[in-house]
Image (tube, rainbow, N blue to C red; front, side):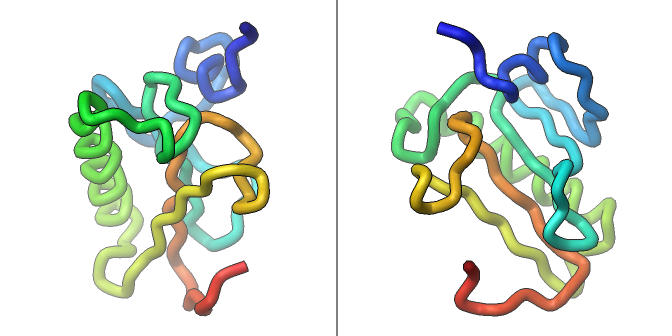
Length: 114
């Protein structure tokens, strides 16, 4: 099976400017930003979506949220707030079927989204 675009980024087959990297996670700016700060945080392990997480993946989620916290602090988002989004399935807006989290900030967010 052909690897998804995020797997190719993880494997350095597609160049990406990483803004964060750890043992199990990378992060980069979204190519179609929906806020002044819009980053994607992805596990290096291919996991289709949140529905496919397993108990043994819990350490990956800890690293994801550590990355989010670090990036939010670096981008001065922590004080005024930010949004974290992940989608499961096409109807929810998932277009790349590799678990990823959107970190959005730098503007007022509305509720409900989308």
